[in-house]
Image (cartoon, rainbow, N blue to C red; front, side):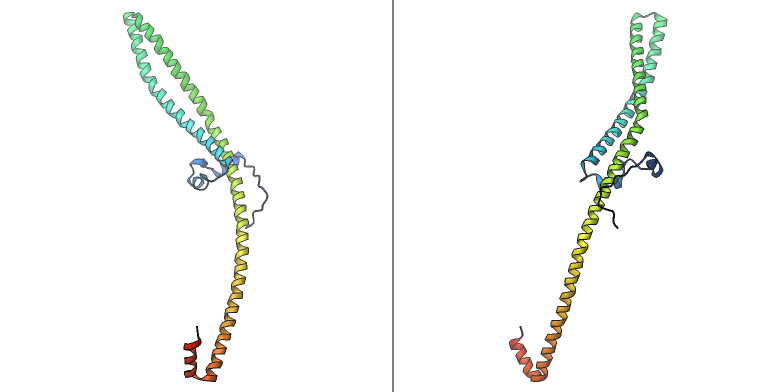
Amino acid sequence: MFLGKKQIDIDLAEKIIKKNKIPILTQYEPWKKLFNEGVNKEIKVFAKELDDILKRKKELERELIKLQNQKPKKMAKIIYISNELNTNKNQAAEVELDKLKKEMEEINDNIDSIFEELEVIPKLIEEKNLDLLKATVKYSYDDMNKGESRLSEIQEVIAKLRKELTLLREEKEQIEEKVNYIYNFLHSLLGYKDMEKLDNKLLK
């Protein structure tokens, strides 16, 4: 497999993400396994920015639940104080009612603000995920190219070692053949008993 050594510039459009249903990368286990550590600065920056947006989304959702839970309690108090004011003309109740109404307006304003921010967050997540995807693909191809280059170097070393091994095997066979030939020559010339004596004395 040859990937080329020049830097690869890949333009990934939004439709590619939608078409392939790209997950949120920082929450995707295969991505985390490959790119959580030992990656370049660009990936780290995009990953952090994406995680910050996701963190903000959770904070807003928690705050929204909190405010929505406050509304019924606040409304119940407003109804109670309104009845108290209408029935007893209690001036203190009027002050309390104004305070509660302002608090309710503040809650509603905060809820509206949260909904507005939550409305744009999916788009922000998609855009930042796309940035991270581009950086990931670019880094991946650069890394694979480096791997391919290193594999070529290793293949050259292996080929050289194989050649050396072949030469060593041939030399080994030649030496073994020569040793056996000499031994057989001496054995036929001197006989078994004398060869055995010489073996014990001279062979190392």
